[in-house]
Length: 580
Image 1 (tube, rainbow, N blue to C red):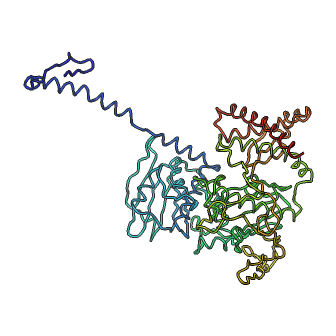
Image 2 (cartoon, rainbow, N blue to C red; image 1 turned 90 degrees about the vertical axis):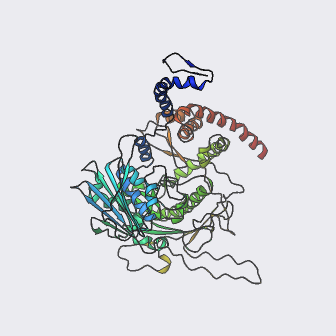
Image 3 (cartoon, helix red, strand yellow; image 1 turned 180 degrees about the vertical axis):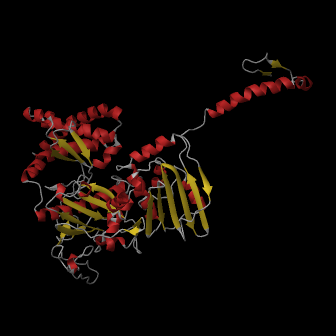
């Protein structure tokens, strides 16, 4: 046996004589003193270090709004998920603190421990609108410290948390200061910036009204009462926010029923005005459980002739089951994606019908343009089907249907309204146009939001099938009901042209639509040389590359896409010969 130390004395050898070994005990001690530091260093090389600051910045970038808006919105979302009925927001500019207190269920001591783990969450996928306490965690980026106090039953605890450098976020227990009375949770943010918008009364109110409009509008009370039976109240600096009705020159209310249900599963309104709405009000918004998820026209795939003069809101509680992990968008693939697409299709029908009633539609030239690009869309759809397995993120743009109408997994199973694939076919009814003037004293029963006209009597004799109920006057039926003509619902990739002279991009992907810039010099040159088809295919490939692959692989994806697009021509010729 031989023992040696790096750059140490000569090797020590012995042949098993224990007496001789004891003579060298001093040398062995000195050897261990030299070797152990090397061993400890080797162990430290396997240590995992996380850049928490960078991680929080990446989390912040996952949300489209400003950081302060995201913090406030997500704190409110977690309060709503806890069953709160009141949320009090108090700003103290002198002390640079923002305090948010709710009367929800609160947390136990062990829950508060997990609350400080950036990788931990008590949220269940498909339920609720808050995500992993993101509001408080992002608050670490703008705060000196975050104090959290919570009370549930006999457990009343509090902690102080802060970001100490890029790799450490220590927290410690502190005595509760009495922010919570009976039950609930309170957070106090000590802000770095004394001029932060989170300390401004007007900013707090405007953000709450924009992000949680359905909770502050009486028109949505009926559909939200199932989830908030005791209602919900916001208070900002001791003042309860007034609940305001929708205003506008013309307001039309909408209701959507799914899967042959009589009760509306989504309600909302469209409003138009002679003058443009403010930027933050333009477009159609969609919300779930009172939290606005998206706003604009791009997500719906429909744009009125005067988009800046039309606004609206649709509340669909069941869509909480289709939210992505960060609760900031909707899933577009699988059963949950089909749920979102089903609602989206029904809302498209409702909005299109109302815009047509108002005469606010695109000119007929747009219809001719749709007919011109539809064959190209079919070719591109063939390419996408071919590429979907190789590039999974393209699956959300692929329409796979047999025999026309796409089957959607929307049914009564489960509280979230999800059923097994193919269990139910989308069937939706849309309330007819209901224009409400500001002078109107009352609206007949048929026009009340969230209610449909009474159904016709149904008969069942000797076990025979019940007759199909007659469609009430003023109610349109979205394709999909039994006994009615079906037309294919399109859920695949669409192409739309818009003019953006100052935009250097050939096109951009918005939801499932590629918006092509027909004012781009390259497009004008393609038209002059009669090569629009190739230009459109190239623009689509460049737009899809941003979704399908990392930037480094974009060129390879574009090459593969154009190759498959060229190969699709042979398949089109074969189909043409078979038809002839």
